[in-house]
Amino acid sequence: MNKLVRNDKVGVVYSPEFGAGWYTWNPDYPELVFDPVIVEYVESEQMEKLEIYIRLKYPTIFLGALPHLIVEWVPQGEEFRITEYDGKESIEIKRGTTWMIA
Image (cartoon, rainbow, N blue to C red; front, side):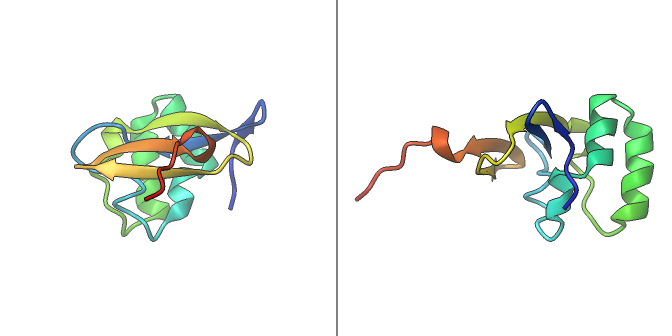
């Protein structure tokens, strides 16, 4: 899977706004999180070009989160997951999480 790496961090695309998730509402396409073209378009706020690119490359995905996408730079090799509540996604870094044991 192609990823955009800068300063030993990987660009991760997600939607932190309520309404619709990006990855969590399109789980069959994990590459949406890392696609270097998507990362570049989101960072440069070229949303019209981004929409054209996505419609051509991923014609069957749900685009409800498109206006709310942001990029977070996660340290390369770090384990993380994207969680969602009511469309609002969050990135959770594994090492930064305290787990409880019953």
